Length: 248
Ligand code: PEP
Image (tube, rainbow, N blue to C red; front, side, top):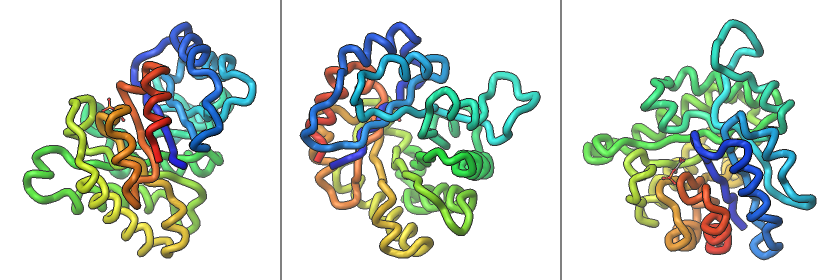
């Protein structure tokens, strides 16, 4: 069993969202995966209305502001997302960090706000190609994880971590299963040091970065790869279902 998550980024308006869920249907019982889809916030209500009865798919938003309300043009709050049907929130996706300049401190505030409202944050971490070449993978992902954990406080509720090397997102390049396992192992160790080994084992760590039906199986076969966060290949219900079928 794995977590199979889809990040639709700025794709899929309401009509396409409805068509996706009509075709995706109710995934078969085989695998017993946990499914989470992150449509654009404007398509969330349509996603809620389009999920077939009995669907195990949960919904989330791709970003939130940490404040409850106010003069923050263009932003949405966690309570708005929750009211519209979100139970998960992506926090610190690499596009938020690298395109929109989101900082570790902002990630911490968002993670705290998400948990305060009872939603599940999926905290994204990952190194750039330059950082990998400079041998700084562990340093970068642990710094990002530590900042998020600081936001979660002493008694974090449920959360997930997504290891998404920046150089693998939307590029067709995928981390090897060994590289993914090495990074996930590093993250698990840090979680164990902070939360204790038992709780650390219960935190799903997802891999993201050009996941497709042909590589999802070998990635999720590794001990510390508990699921996948899929961008491009989650836009097509057939390939998203094929990825789920391949996940272990
Ligand atoms: C993502 O958006 O989180 C992602 C991993 O994208 P892709 O699968 O397209 O690389």
